Every structure is written in C-alpha cells, then in structure tokens.
Length: 255
Ligand code: NAD
Image 1 (cartoon, rainbow, N blue to C red):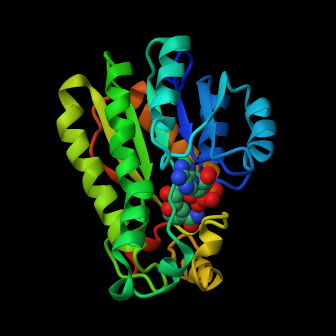
Image 2: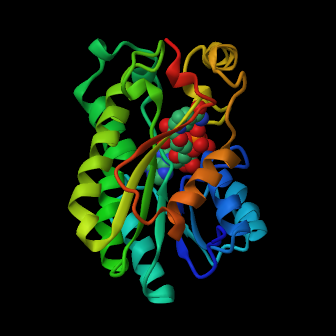
C-alpha cells in the first residue's frame, strides 16, 4: 500500500507565510492528493496567504480568527456546504500577549494566561467539536505541541503549561471520539524559524542547542512535520490514536 491522500479533504488552520509549519503540512498533503480548505487570520494577513493558497490549489480560502466568536464555526459551515464531510483538520496555531510570553509564568496575569490558553489550546477542542459533525465515518485531528510541555525550556514560560494542556486535550479527545473512528494526535516539532517562534526570547540559542544536541545534529523542517501529518491522516495509520510524536531529530532524548 502506498501513501496517497487522494479523495481526502480537510482543514489547515495556521498558515501565516511560507515558513509556517501549517504551510509545510499543506504542501505535503496537497502533493499527496488531498483537497484543502485554508484559513487566514484577518484582512492584513490575507495578501500573504492568498498566493500560497493559489499555489496549493486550495479549494477554499476563508477568514478565521478563533478568538472572534463564530469565525471557526463559519469555516465548518462552508466546508459542510461545499464538501459535506471532511477527513482531517490540522490545528497549527498559537498566540500569547508578548509581555506575558517574555515574563515569568509566576508573574502572568489571569487575563493574559486565559487568552493564550483559549487561542492556543481550547480552540483545538472547539475544532474537534465542529469536526465530529463532518466526520461521520471517522477522520484525523492534529495539533502542534512542543517539548516545553513536559520539560522546562528556558524562555518558553507560560506556553509550557499551555502546551501541556493541549497534549492532554489531544489524549482526552482521542478517547472521547475514538468510537466514531476520529483519531487525534499531537505532533511535537523541534524549534523551527517561524514568525511565532521569533516571539520567543533567545530563540537562536534554542535552535543552536537543538542542532548540537540532537542525535541527528540538525533541525526538523515544516515539510517533515507535513510528512508525519500525511502518514497520520492516511489509511496507513488507521489504528493509531492519542499519540504525541516528535519531529525534532531526536532532541527530546537528550537531557
Ligand atoms: P506561525 O507564526 O507561522 O503560525 C502561527 C499561526 O497562528 C499563524 O498563522 C497565526 O495567524 C495563527 N494564529 C495566531 N492567533 C490566531 C487566532 N486568534 N486565530 C487563528 N489563528 C491564529 O508559527 P509556527 O511556528 O508555524 O506555529 C504553528 C504551531 O506550531 C504553533 O502551535 C506553535 O506553538 C507550534 N510549534 C512551533 C515550533 C517552532 O519552533 N516554530 C515548535 C513546536 C511547536
């Protein structure tokens, strides 16, 4: 059996530009035959995402800011209208107020923490909630975590506990939606130079550390996250659910 995504349709949430992990996923999924619905954050972001959506031959390009009530739901309504059912949804978004991200967890405000948690974590739960209606015959839900969920990584601050919650949500969703044959995984990429990553203090040091300490002596790439996403979405991974899988050249093995 070869890896083909012909006939599969789904959502990619989180393309900001060509460096986005979501773009790496979209590229590989499209190359393997999947049909895509792609979103952009707002009108300011649209000119950056539109040419990528055209290049990828995306069937739909829709606005989606998950913090605006109704926008995520509207994306699912559009997919339902055009496609009926979907086979996968990829959640590749994160956000925190910058001052909170740059400060210590112990100093974080309730408001900042909750906004970051809502956009970076609970939006995945809402995505799963919407997906179940469009996945009567099963499907795959993926989200992006990070090693800072389980280990203390310098400068990752409040995003560590938020990614830990996201990983836990993926496991509970895998359990709750399993009977419906909806499979749920979190992918844990190593550091990759994206716009979101540039908000993390001393990110260059994190990349140097990942390169020198990983067994493979290199960083992973968004395309390599896409390859894993393709496998997990494909029928080759039909018995797999609830996993947390690294794409980090093995960096997580080393202390
Ligand atoms: P990116 O900046 O390319 O993507 C982040 C995306 O989040 C953007 O498209 C942005 O528009 C979107 N986003 C932010 N707020 C949003 C909102 N309110 N509604 C909808 N979308 C919103 O950066 P990336 O590195 O590709 O990030 C993708 C995911 O990968 C994130 O969850 C990030 O934490 C995770 N991740 C990144 C790395 C890394 O080193 N780059 C490592 C591990 C995990």
